[in-house]
Each structure stands twice: as C-alpha cells, then as structure tokens.
Image (cartoon, rainbow, N blue to C red):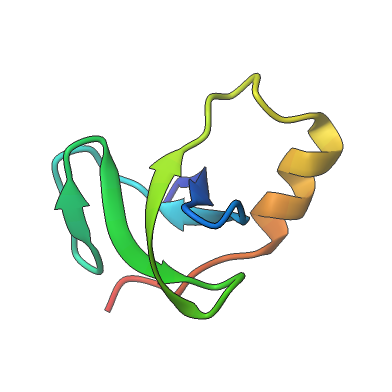
Length: 71
C-alpha cells in the first residue's frame, strides 16, 4: 500500500498509509488526523506534506520512519 509523508504537530516527519476519507488507525480531523507519531512516541495531529516541500534527502529520511501497519 502506498505511504504518504506527514508532519506531526511537533514537527516530526514520517510516512503513513493515508487513504482519503478512510481512517483505520487514527481519528480524522478534516485535512489532518490524530494518530500516534513514531518520532515522538505520542498521539499528535498529523498532516500530509506537499510533494515539493521537502528536499530529496529529507523525504528519504521521513520515508525511513514508519508508523504501525493497518491493524
């Protein structure tokens, strides 16, 4: 399944499965979600990052950090 790079409210970047209008492991809040951040180890609001907003190196680093899979 395709993963999307997101940014948590504390500024951490990681990748997660992000299907519009579907939420199996998070609470949807409009264009963001409340889910567990693997960077900080706590529940935070997360939003998708625009494809051109990160450098290639930043994107690779974010894609290397993943949250839990679908339960």
